[in-house]
Every structure is written in structure tokens, then in C-alpha cells.
Amino acid sequence: MVDETFVTEMNEKALGGGRVSDEEAYRLADAPVEAVVEAADEIRERNMGDGVDTCSIVNAKSGGCAEDCGFCAQSAHFDTEVDRYGYLEPDEILDAAKRAEADGANRFGIVVAERGINKEKRPEEFEKVLESVRRIRDETGIEPDASLGLITEEEAEELVEAGLKHFNHNIETAPSFFDNVVTTHDFEDRVRAIEVAQDAGMRVCAGVIFGMGEDTEHRVEAALALRDIDVDTVPVNVLNPVPGTPFEDYSKITVEEILQGVALYRFIMPEKVIRLTGGREKNLKDRQGEVLRAGANGLLIGDYLTTEGQEADRDEEMIESVGMEIQDVEGKT
Ligand code: SF4
Image (tube, rainbow, N blue to C red; front, side, top):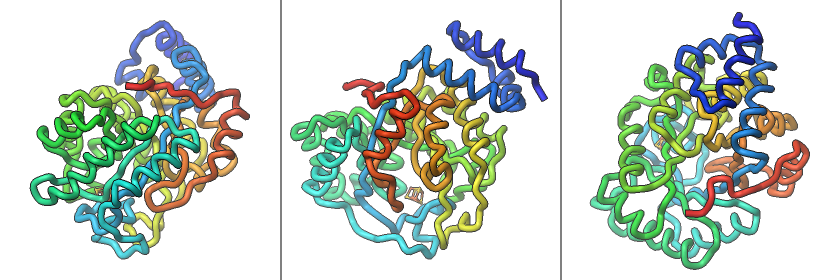
């Protein structure tokens, strides 16, 4: 076990603008969790202030996905009870964006259950995505975001032209653990999609899911990969096992493991938005605020893709109870 002196040393390094090396990050994973959490809170406060960035999503196309991500209720490979529907009408997306804005979200993500939105195969669907983005830009004050899977350079450019400046594509887990989660595409496919979005000028939100059988070292490995890719915001989901998926019987990871994971992410990426997302209510219950005091400074609010979230008022109360406040930390683009 690494002692607290090392945590203090790393804290001073991070506060002084230094970069924790890969080796130091792995050593921190072996340090007392309480000390790491306390230091991560200080790094967040000093570097990012007390603002909590909020976003919300809509499941714009649900179920029947050809990929086999083991955690996902929407994969056609598994027998789950998820709704199946094609891409919603832009009017419906717009209504959802307005609701998210009223709930206090800073960003609104259009999410499709697909390996990738595909202009060549489904031109009408792609056109509807573009229209949704344009209308969110023109008719609301919320910033559009989208999670459209693997996209081509041409698609990325058209999306940017329509007004999309934020793109989500999670790496899900560590490169060395990826094959335990997905077999229909590989880690490099995911990284390529992120690079395509970055090259087109979009800010990228890319993160992970904790609790899929990985260990602390895998969580650190994933954070180091995200740092290398230079993503802008990092969603941290915690697995909420869905009946019918291969991960349905996975036992929950502990709250301490979640706090430790988030705190290590803050050490590794001291100036990024680290966002607590899916699975937070189920896994953390009334301890969600502790994650905001362990280095996180973002929250996905409202409902998730296939499960319900808690009410916006309760989130606001929770944020205030830990001395933080909703703020557009990422800023408008
Ligand atoms: S996570 Fe996305 S790509 Fe994977 S099965 Fe679910 S919808 Fe498809």
C-alpha cells in the first residue's frame, strides 16, 4: 500500500499545474481511498470551481442495434424488454430539448442505438438528425450534442455545418478489457470515431462504465487512454445490470470503488469536466453527492436511455447540499 505522503505529493503536483505520470496514476490506485478522494476534491475546487455542468439526453432511436455491447439493453443480440422504435420526428426531439432546457440542462444529446448513423444507407434518417440539430440551435437556448456512433468525415462535416459542436462517443472501458465487453467492433474503432469528430472541430465527450468486471487498474488505464485522446468531458456511468443482457447478474461495485475511480480520474484529468451519468441512483442512492465531492463536476440529469432518472429538483437539492451549483462549466460554443 502506498502511503498518504505520496497522495500529498501528487496533490501538490496537480495543484501546481503538473501532470501525474502514468506510473504515478497506477500508484495512486494503491493509496488510501479517503486521502485520494479528499485531494481530488481540492483539485476540482481549485481548477474548476464549484460549478456542476448538466446535460440531458433523448433516446432518439431505440433498440435493435446490431452491436453486442454486453451492458446494453438495446442490442439485438439480447432478449431484453426495451422499446424498439425508429428515429423520432424532429418535432419530438425539439420538445425533448425544450423540456431538458426547462429542467436546467446546459446541453442536450441526441442518442441513436446504432453502430453508426449512416447517411449512405439511411439518408432520410441522417437528414432528420441534421434538421433536429438546426432546430435545437434556432429554437432553444440549449446546446445540441449527439451520440451517433461511428461516423465518417463527410457526415461529421455536415453535422458541424448544421450546428453540432459536441459529440459523444464513449470508450466504455480500458483498451485491455474491451474484448470482455464488445466483440462486434474494437477499441480502435471507437477511438477513430472520436478522432473524426475532433478533426471536424467538435468538442468530444467520451467516458466509461464502471462495474463491468474490470478492476481499479483497468479504470486507471481507461482514464489514461482518455487523457491521451484529449477528450473534453468524461462521463462516468456505473453499470445498472439489465435483465436479458450478459451482464444481468453482475454484482454492484461498492460506493468506495466508485468514489476512488472518480477521484483518480480527477487526478489524471485535473481540468476536464468529469460527469456522473447513468446508474448513479441505483448504485449510489443517497450517496451521489459524495461523488461530487470526490472530484466530479458534471451530471447527466433527467432520464437515461432505457431507465428512469431522478427528478430535476432532487438533483438540484443534491448539488446544493454539497455546496456546489449548476453552471455551464463547458461554456457555450
Ligand atoms: S451501446 Fe450503442 S453500439 Fe453498443 S449495442 Fe448499445 S446501442 Fe448498440
